[in-house]
Image (cartoon, rainbow, N blue to C red; front, side, top):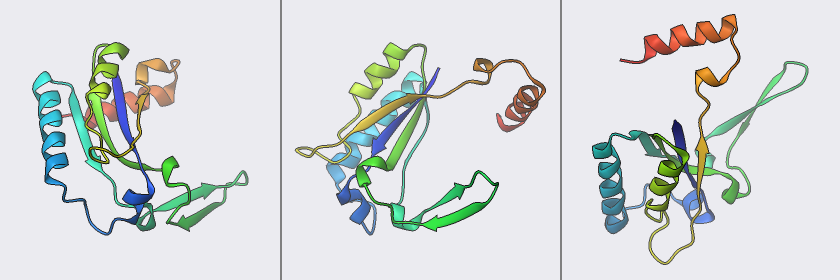
Length: 141
């Protein structure tokens, strides 16, 4: 089972002009991710640039696409970073998420959201699914 630990953004993260240099927080994050790597559950993880450096593609019902540049309102609805893990159960994912260091730093409020990823086996059989499975095999080392 794969889960994404999502670090929700905040006004402070969105206002940043460079990555935060909080050495204590960075050290906590390194230790936490090292523990996950040693446990064999860490797949990937990274922080994201503020939304002002991004864009959204809006898909219309008529097939049109419109690009909208950031920044985006409501920082609390945005993602500031993620960690992707593979675990045996929802409970194990929950335990790892409880141990996630406060991404805003000690004494500050932050939100971490956990979402399970769909696996290809979750979908009903179809030719496009078989094509995805072939593609998936070519992408994995």
